[in-house]
Image (cartoon, rainbow, N blue to C red; front, side):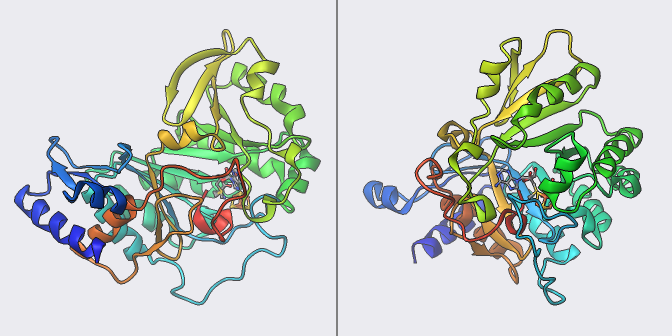
Length: 361
Ligand code: SAM
Ligand code: SF4
């Protein structure tokens, strides 16, 4: 009932303000205390601001839960079963949801998965999203293995930036972590991305104590020679790695203790950034395990089966399938209203019953 009321007020105000609306979402508890409903005001362009004052302008859209790898921390060894036709969002549904999100204030979309490059129609999805006039940035996260065939077409389809996941620089270890990948394919993918003209490549490395933390120096060395950003990301306890031993969950800030030569530069979003003296590239530290991260979170997520998630770690989901126009926008705004202040990963594993490949990392 509460959300229906809010929806009605939002609709009226959106109409009154011709869509140029700032929604300051208010949680049910606060709503009852203030007895004033959601606060609306104009700021010259659409923006979604949640009840904790965070601007929400970044959508991570998962286009498949399937993958050609089986990374030990992400997916079960047996993989996931391919669902029946229609179990994942169609190209048209992806486009419609993205358009509604942009009307609500989203300015950056990251396509993810599973492995987005195994998705049939991935180039159509990219082209459809790129055609949304107010979308400022279209990014994609990939394990890189299919970039030799797809880097150029992705660039032509309008993808602005690529993140390539790479957890190790050692052949045997790569095979162990991914259970089936080949490091040479990942390197070939990085080269193909560069050849296709992608700049500011980001390499994402999940830091795992006792698994790859002996390679930090090798990863840092890459930034001396290449203009890439190597980003170390903390392992989050969810899915297959939820019960891993404590020592695997290493704070990435440990890197600063081990490599004091790293000089801090300006941050970017949730990444604190550093540079080695004279290096061409940069180093990013991403600390999803800390609450500081949640305070700066600008994201919402849509799973491959069309569920909106305000937080990666929450159980709350809103089904977007079958909704159109205003109804779809209202559902997205409801998702923002439900976005929690933070996760509880320092106390226990993620609350979501889903694995990362299902949600889209
Ligand atoms: N397949 C693509 C890839 O690997 O880049 C995109 C999807 S993957 C789920 C997105 C990112 O999530 C990857 O960088 C992956 O390493 C990361 N990831 C998966 N499970 C994680 C976990 N439990 N903690 C931290 N990062 C995780
Ligand atoms: Fe696939 Fe990416 Fe998950 Fe690895 S991290 S299994 S590449 S979805």
